[in-house]
Image (cartoon, rainbow, N blue to C red):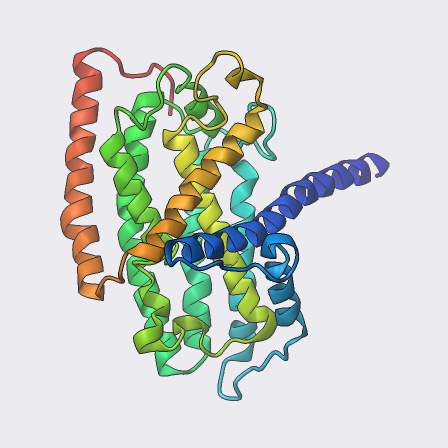
Length: 335
């Protein structure tokens, strides 16, 4: 019994060691997001609360904590309360298989890619639950949009990941990173990297694809009826998913924790630092696009996903597999 308690305590410690940095990172990237928008628009952004405005996100979080949570009288209260919890939980548990270095990962499983794909696919349920349980037309319309949008672009992301798996021969995320020790996959698979990045914008409801929460026509989409900490949980889950997509892009295409050049002094930088820097680089692109690209119409969004990205991804998959087969470069590992 004592051994089981010790094992449980160790696992809880590992989980906290993973979740606390993620929650702190979410607060920091919100600040970075706002600073990038400010720079693009020639203004300062957050600069009052704390040095350089670093505590602005903490102040916003405190505001959400102390604000009253209002539950609409006509809503399905159980589902209404569960929706933000589901969204935030699924966004956080996905990080369990993300390796920050070769020896720094909470759960090193052989099917890490499948785990990520499964958990990220479930994320749409939280949004649908929130939109339906609100018993209001605008949240429900936003939830329907989100379901169609996320399902559409998950198809493209899945085919893009298959391109990478063909080159590696393993579903383990660490193996994918180590396979890029000589050449990052962003070079031979650059078109897939571009499509993955754009699909990640749509998957996380980021501009120019923020149609489920389009302020112009839907007030705030599926979040319209939420307030206080329940609204903040949706917001937390969204930014945790954005970071997760940046981490996936880093692992699949940018060599994960591997240094840019394996020579002195680059190889002296710790592996987790390289991983964090690459994630921040992708997030900077996320923030930049939000500041400079206008929103798509919904029909344009669907056309891009089904009529352009899907056929192109399938064609590139055939080309990749043909190239690997012709030059006898197919991996010998077992999927």
